[in-house]
Length: 357
Ligand code: 2NL
Image (cartoon, rainbow, N blue to C red; front, side, top):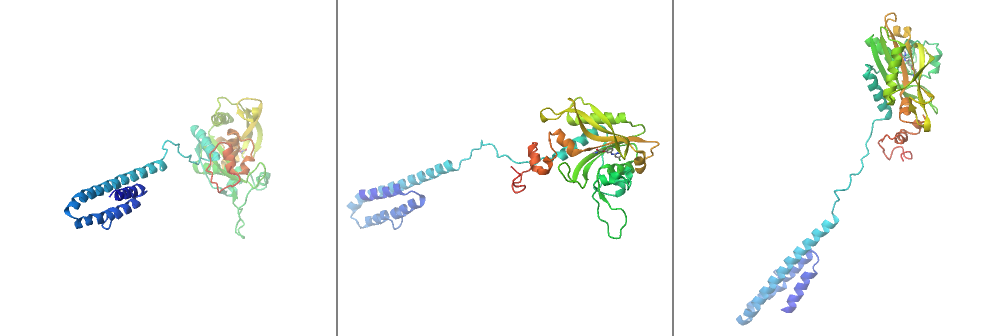
């Protein structure tokens, strides 16, 4: 009996998982188990023998059952302990950084410019990028023979073979949008026209597509003085400075008379641009009083109305504002450009490989 006890208690102790433990229980206490077989033996004993062996066998059966239950609980505890040890999560860890896209600097600057002029009562007009030859050139006092046409490196759209009308063009400036605004709204008028423009020019300092914003204000007695105030307010707001000095230099555009190029006082100390101080001048835009022929092209009577107009490159003022020293930065890759200037772009590792780090 002691051998039996030792044997099964050891078997219980050595079972190291639930199924091994169940096998021990069946082998000991199952219908065909060893202890069960011993129980059946009781029937063949004398009453005296049974009196002695019965309780001992029952006690052994209870003891083995208890040992199995204890072992089962111990195995469950150990399993739980193991899961707690291996499946823990540190909920205090910071979240993984998520890459987020941002507005492109060109779009952002366009919005900034639009907001500044909106505060001064200018609305925004947009127009087609494929323009009629008339809106892009003739209406702006640039006739067919004018050298400005050749200088503009225009992209011409194809016509059908026997169509002799002048071909459409990719607009070379946003001025045609202002012609359309005059045609549609008439005077008085205050409008700015931001957008893409195209010139067949591609080198270190030129891209075939770039961005421009032009402005137009027409009223009974609008003058260069109004132009100067509007541009001063714009430059102060855009470059976020309290004071600025503008310099108007006589110039020539076919669509304005008189015409002026506008410089702002600045310094380039340490390679970074400071607007409003220093001894350098930075050219930022062209402007003038709208040519009477251009007013007439927009169906506005030049005897009753006059106005100013100006135009500037968005890519250029974006680079100036955000400290981009070299136009060539544009050509390498937008992503490199954006990263350099602290705009977090969507960085797709499979795109622009080699430039993305
Ligand atoms: C420049 C110069 C300029 C204009 C654009 C304009 C438009 C109309 C009538 C008269 Cl509809 N003028 N636009 C005038 C002067 C200069 O742009 O350097 N742009 C980047």
